[in-house]
Amino acid sequence: MIIYRFPRSRSLKVLWTLEELGVAYDSVKVDLLTANKNSESPHPFGKVPYLVDEDISISETLAICIFICEKYSGESLYPSALLEKSLVNTWISFAMTDLESCVWGLLKQLLFIPEDKRNSAIVSELRDEVYKVITQIKIDPRKKWIASDTFSLADIFMSQTLQWAKYCGIELDEPINTYLEKTINRRSYQIASERNDA
Image (cartoon, rainbow, N blue to C red; front, side):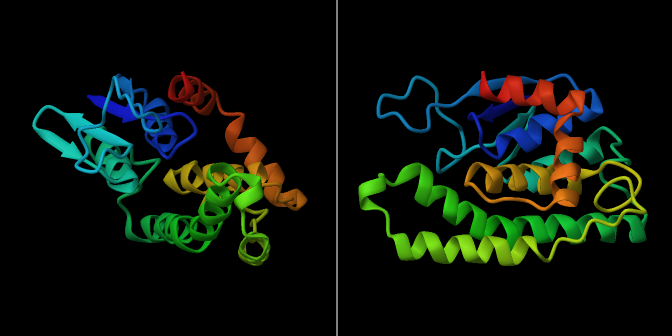
């Protein structure tokens, strides 16, 4: 299995999933931001992450993570029981739509647009939207993790997006920040992060 990756990108979610399940894999760093590319993703649009596993190729982050869980019986990360799966899917959907859409918009403004060319009104609007969405996150103190007492794909998808928000200077309230710190202190995250950013 080969994962095409890029530092600080969504490919971290894939590597983190693999590390959680203890699955062996190879990864290839793709030159996304340089004109002279020594290594390119086989993705039709050159994007990452991209998975190649024998005769199977998959191009979307969630699809890749679910494939890995289903292939390697990652029941804890992505349960098959309908109730547990519905809770995990709810948080993944929230992370990928409500939360990531505004966080990614803000991140692009702050990371890819030179400061003298940024639109301050757009940045302010996106910050307001991020704060609005984050106030909708309620950490249930009765659960160990975001969806249940079991660490899952929902935690992987939520926590990377919350990290992006912090990178943008968004302050998280104590329950959310405590939750985030707990996720990124996992050994699997630390290994995945090191390998993704290498």
